[in-house]
Amino acid sequence: MRERADFLMARTYREFPAYARQREEPFDWDTDGCSPPTPRSWARAFQDACVIHDFGYRNYGGQRLRLDPTEARRKSIDDRLLEEMLRICTDRPGTLPNCPGTARTMYQVVRLYGGSAFNGA
Image 1 (tube, rainbow, N blue to C red):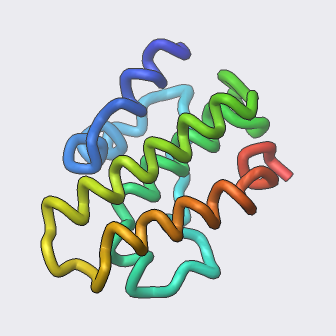
Image 2 (tube, rainbow, N blue to C red):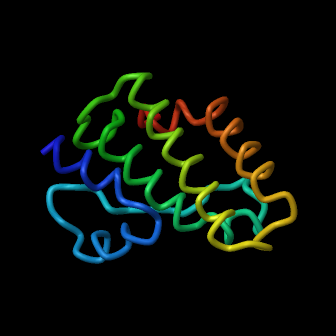
């Protein structure tokens, strides 16, 4: 099961929605997109990356499946978020002013404050 989750986590923001629509069991596909207090313009721009991030937190973290509830895994999921946000910046020029800087800021916030979400608290 973890190998399948790893495969899904490696999909790009363009590929992931096709898998998410299938809602493959036993994975948790629930998402709240880019959680508050994310500014609305950032949340819209990075929605697709946040959905992948939610999948990672909900399936690897301390919630239902607990596939790898370690801090190292949390960092790898956060790193994937940054990677996909930067991909969005490249693929969709003009998405946000200073899009790469915005992506890095969002990444830092997730690194600082995302632990409780990952751990299921």
